Length: 109
Image 1 (cartoon, rainbow, N blue to C red):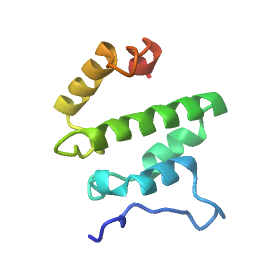
Image 2: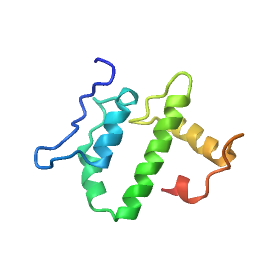
Image 3: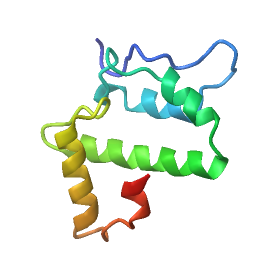
Image 4: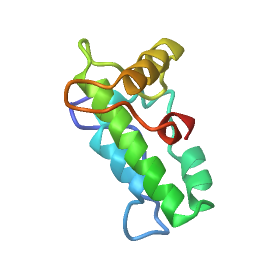
């Protein structure tokens, strides 16, 4: 697969613009295992959510993808393995030099 390409669909034919989930997945395509991930399941769940919930989950997902990209070696984020999630939750809880520990709502979502 060429860098920046993905097997994940970027747009459904019945919508003129990609959804925020499709945009996030497309932007971070190199972190995804397209054979194991499919945007249709999350897309259906996402469509049923309130706008504030969608915004919060999209922000959380972008934050998680950024963390995956910052790890060495880079972690494949979707599907996430349990060990990666444990490291991410520990990182959230501990904070960092430039970031305070996450509020309890972030890991719960």
